[in-house]
Amino acid sequence: MKSRIFILIGPPGAGKGTQAKNIANLKDFVLISTGDLLRENVEKKTELGITAKSYMDKGELVPTELVARMIKANIKQNIGRNGFLFDGFPRDLAQNALLSEMLKEFNLDVDKVIYIDVKDEAIHERLTNRRICPKCKKVYHMKYNPPKHGELCDDCNVSLIIRDDDKIDVIKKRLEVYHKSTQPLVDYFEKSGRITKINGERTPKEVEGEIISNI
Ligand code: ADP
Ligand code: AMP
Image (cartoon, rainbow, N blue to C red; front, top):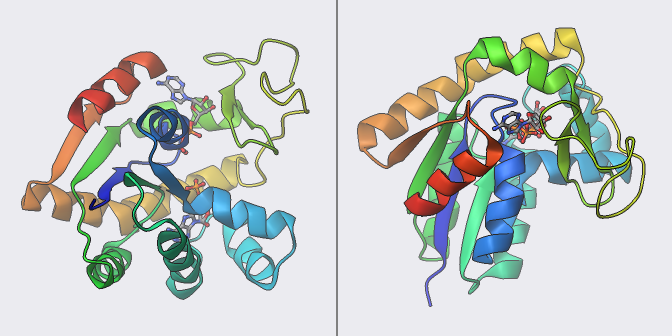
């Protein structure tokens, strides 16, 4: 059976990670989140992680060749699975060209791109209140999606953490990078007609329902 390929795209804080984890579970897709994979490498202090951290801390994109290496290994390991859901990759036109090339090698192609649309004005509040579980990577918001007990993960019971790049100046930079590098890719997908635009400024459940009905 040929694996189906879906891409979640949108600005930082749009809710990609929140949705990706639930959808991958519900649909039994392999989740490839480049942000989570990079943060794992940073945590383990691998060579890749040490290099990547200097870019991530500034809110810049990590060089594509480093990200590509992780992705390819992941696709190879999971070939034959029901589907793949990409969160945070591709991030610009060059990464998209690279993904197409990689998929071609495995005789695969992108089925659909889901664009979660959230305006810049909402991003700041979302990211300054974000917490993540260092163990299972689940995403919380202290106001909109708070943990049940204090600042502990509902599933793992470990203390939630604030991402190093969820600082005001880094958030600003990440938004700039999004508009400069990722927005042109969104425009390209729009022209090619493979994108479904979803209003991300509704409850996570509503957003999830619309994504599910589109894949
Ligand atoms: P991304 O992966 O796109 O950067 P996240 O999934 O990490 O975004 O979400 C960013 C923050 O916004 C988190 O704190 C998350 O709990 C919160 N969030 C996600 N979806 C929604 C939503 N529909 N409404 C309000 N807050 C949300
Ligand atoms: P995210 O978890 O998607 O918000 O990504 C956090 C940070 O990881 C970004 O600001 C980048 O520094 C880096 N990153 C994640 N995905 C990519 C990618 N596809 N290409 C380059 N850098 C990435």
